[in-house]
Figure: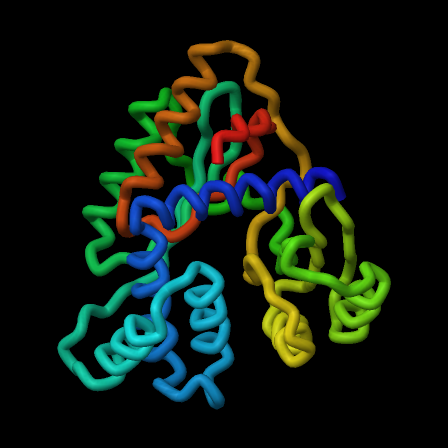
Length: 249
């Protein structure tokens, strides 16, 4: 499970950085719009919207901002239609990168993503060129500081709700599910009043690639930074065995 944990923690840190820049609200706002368009504005009848609302609350998005986004998507027939697109490609030394985006302009997004890869010495490949190196899983992270119960109780609750695996890390409990079960497990934990850092489907690398050359590391960071700055980009997954970030925060 160490690979899973490393990936989840990297993603968590990245989203903390995104939140500091305000991007995470843009990302979630688009997800709300898509969820409402697909399943309606009532969370009780729209599991995808429930998932996005839970994500929004976990990232401290104000309730009025969430409600405004739902109302806007439900009431404005002329509101922007976002489509989901995925790009796959390679970074330095054959690192695998997957980019999920929600866009109202595929040409713009494709150009920006290709530009990010190129500036970092990588290249966009064909659909499916690297996704086979990843497993699609649901990952739920519970901060140990936010949970005062027994680890075994949390594990049994998660497994009974349909989780596949449970791991205790230094600062968190990490629950792995089938991507289609992440909502059910999250809702079971919510009913017990358990707070979660995140709960969503993600792509977990089967193997990691080490980058030892300083230039390769700079190029990889360049790709990730440029993708991170693009409002169309929702999520970025990669198999770089990224060193632990400096404990700055």
